Image 1 (cartoon, chains in turn orange, blue):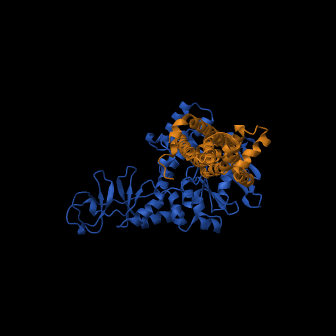
Image 2 (tube, rainbow over the protein chains, first blue to last red; image 1 turned 90 degrees about the vertical axis):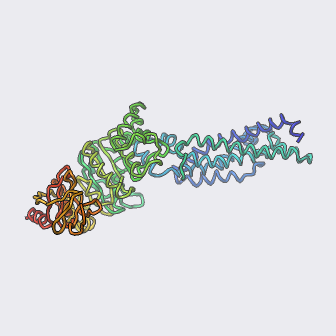
Length: 213
Length: 355
């Protein structure tokens, strides 16, 4: 493991890139998925097209999406924006159904009494539906986080640096050390993302503590 | 006053939930809508605060057409209580109760003070203020639901089977407290239930609805029991309506003097002896010949119900029928013994009143 000692600062920089490329799309994706999920939940007719349509995006291979992005966005081939947008699309693909389900799972009696007290729809979304949707949303976000950390590494193939670059390096030089560091780095990063989401969700749901359901 | 004028709700698929409803819920009274499932009672209720829009007809509150009002404003002026309370699981008891006051723009301090005031009114200990709904029992949650509906002191309340999800003992307790509250507050209440006993107990006026959303009969509960309009109403009101109708008739009792024995002393004599405590409150019956010593708590037969002198014919008759001596115990307002009555004497009163 002298390789790691020699390349510590490089690995650290790649890790930072990985956090940025996987983490920012997680937030952006959530911001897109929640309104989509809300529309899907409120308008039953649009639910299937929205949920199935976004879900299908996940089947587009990442390498294809990375390569297509510059021609769609007009960006340079090495621009990290290509990766950010692609990862946001994957996050939306995973989270829209979750968001719709999470909002749908708000008990009917709670929605009904909010409406009956004169809580208007948008206010209800922010003060009633979303707070109650946090546990389910967080569960979906954890899946998306792990998926993002994993998919981002493919971007090494189009020359956008992050931990995935260690795989291509190790592979092309038939040298195990960077490969192992890359894998462990991804693993640790996924666990950290997971932990951060769990902690944030807990902080956002003091009412949910100690519940069995 | 809530007034329904030829109100009809017809869904797109042709189902008629409510059909040409004419009804007035007078100010300060409890009007109960009762009927089998599918009779449109909940639909009727929800049309008042426009959770459901009527297809035809006019619903007005104090002669103001609700269709002309902004739905959110209308709803903030109407208290609404539902089954399972529908509390916000993510908000404390205080925050739940303060919902409408905060929507109306009260400052937080005033809304909080009001919430605490209401907790006291509905009999919730102040220690519950910061708890979440899932930490409360069903009965306690329903109290919070009632407090929340009362928070902004709306003149009109809509209640949709508010007590049907709790166990029978708690239900009766909640019903009694609800009646006590109503006697203090005098709200105009529209109350939906499928339980005819609840309707009879709570309603100043009871409207029985048929499947398809038409009123079969609207009358005060005593009139409903005495003179059902047709077979449907008679069936719905139930079998022992003659007996239950006695609940609404005051008994002019003239109890006889009853020999008693004090708890802890020796009893003598034939048959049953009534035992009283040191404040002359009846505690049970004993048969002296079966006793070996002084009357103990464990010797008491407690089967008999007790009727109050200012109570109903039903209570008096039940006291007589349930007593092992067949002598029904009658007490004053403080629970002290006045005397006993026999079933035949109560029946004579019932027949005398009829002739």
